[in-house]
Length: 165
Image 1 (spheres, helix red, strand yellow):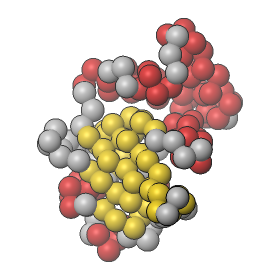
Image 2: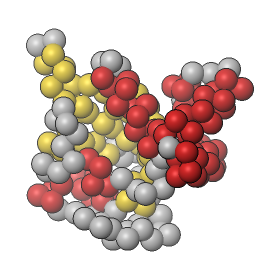
Image 3: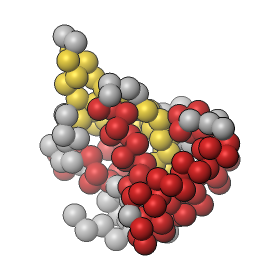
C-alpha cells in the first residue's frame, strides 16, 4: 500500500472497542465500524487483506513474534500496538488477541483493542524505539535480548509487564 507515516496521532473514545477478526493467516474477515472509521479505509478495502496492512513502521517485529508465538500455543496475548491510518496518521491501542475456537479447533483470531493510558504509552514508546533500533542493527534476536533483560530486571513475564500499566 505504501502509506507514508505522518506525525499526527488519532484517538478514539475510551468506551469504544476496535474489533477485528482474521483467518488463520491473519487476513481480515471482520472489522467493526469503529475500526473502519479510525483506519480511514472502506470495509471493502480491509476485508481479505493481511492485518499488517495497518502496521506502523515504528513497531518492532519482536512484539509480533511474541503475539504469534502465544497464538500458536492457543493462548491469548496483550500488546501495545501503534497502527497506521490510510492518511498516514497513527493511533495507539492496547490489544487483546485471542484464538477463535470452533468445535475444538482454532479457526481464526479475534482482536479487541481499547485506548491505552498515556502512562503506558510514555513507557512503551521509548521501549519500542530501543527495540526497533536494536532490530535494525542486530535483527530480532537483538531486540529479544533487550526485552528479556528488561523483564528479568522487573521480575515479570511479558504479559504481566504489559498489564502492569
